Length: 355
Length: 253
Ligand SMILES: Nc1ncnc2c1ncn2[C@@H]1O[C@H](COP(=O)(O)OP(=O)(O)OP(=O)(O)O)[C@@H](O)[C@H]1O
Ligand SMILES: [Mg+2]
Image (cartoon, helix red, strand yellow):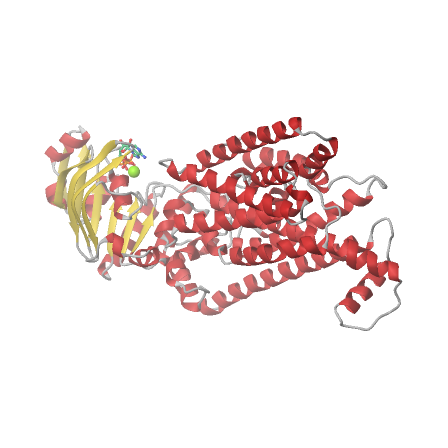
């Protein structure tokens, strides 16, 4: 094989790998979606679900379903599954982008205050009664909280001289504790139990009773933000070699960092705004995928989007069906799966080394 | 190619470099020498625009550094750091290919890139482990990979910080000769070296730094002298003209 042939051969290998990975991820996601829509207190056969989907998409004409099946699928489960997939995708994409930026596989969107800011925003809207006025107010307020917390952290960080990653993470920890203290004060002073319950409930992260309205709130921000981040794949790869390599190879590292952080905060904020705080997805999904397909962000970013979506659909499914009729919250399920994995991850890949 | 005038660098409120004046012409093989902590890395990084300079003036290919966009700069100069930490298992070829970033458009992949990458890897003898993970290489092999990355960047100016520190005697010669060939083709090489014999053998001009200041600057013969080495390194050395390789030979006594 001569030089050029070998080079094209190698290039084709990469294309094939990318295509195969993405096709597999899409299949997993579709499978997750069908299972997620089919299972529940009223089980619907997979075949029936697929036919109803195809009917809804106007691909075929099918009318063998009952009214009840149609309502359960299109009004109850489908929006919930779609919200789960959007939220999962957003958290995983934000996670993988930030891990690339900070050259650290243990970083999570929560570390720059996004989650706690969104949580505080949501708690405020319940505490002050805005959320009762319109179903849009809680997500909007969560979203503003996320942007506020992240901007505060980034502004303080910018003012520090060295702008080191460790300082940023410590600031995030500080803000997170402060916000959770403020929320505790609100919970302690809140007058009615109902209110308090809904705060705690929301904080654990849940996907109950998500409707098409929720889908419409987050779909555009999350899809647009995630697609935008996909274009940063090769830049993130180079940032992994460190600041000096990245800059002398032609990356404007400061600009890249600002854009990626802002978009990551934006999509996480949108996700947390409708789902509450769901931890660990941004950690586990990228980590598992990195083990399978390697650290190349050009592939890792889209794969994480599909993987995160599928993961959260399954986690939500587990939370709904595992100990029926009691439903766990998806945030709890995610933490139950994620936290042990996270510890294993620290022990294995980091051996206690520096952040 | 590079002009540095009256350059001073301050890091963490500490003056590190003071009043440096150098000029490196196109096609020159320029050596930066000096004891540990004398400021070689700092100077190289300042030239690579990785550190801000407190005072002084610099031009790269006739233009002020701030007149370059990041990508333009990366087409002018490449940089091999003294050490690179990496915890992510990229394969070797992907790392070298990152050197091509500045040459690509928005969808940066073309066949020229592939060829240049392969050429750089063959030249540094890293092609044989192109598909291995960077994490599985030895320290010296890794150093060769980062040199290959800089070569793939194909810039008129190449900055190297102790590029042969982890290499065996074969590869030390191999890399220094490779750089020599590049200077013969018109590229400019500025390299930090600790081995004075190798520096004297390959570099035509040199800068000897001591505590952030210029101790000697000029032709190799003018820089590598008994007195200069005594003042900067506090060593007694005999300096002889080695007829076999036609270069100065430094023997510490
Ligand atoms: N970020 C920094 N802040 C403060 N001082 C620094 C910083 N980086 C380097 N220095 C100091 O600047 C001086 C020069 O460092 P530099 O790394 O340039 O030395 P060097 O000549 O490359 O040494 P070596 O041969 O050991 O690589 C040293 O005294 C070092 O302590
Ligand atoms: Mg140094």
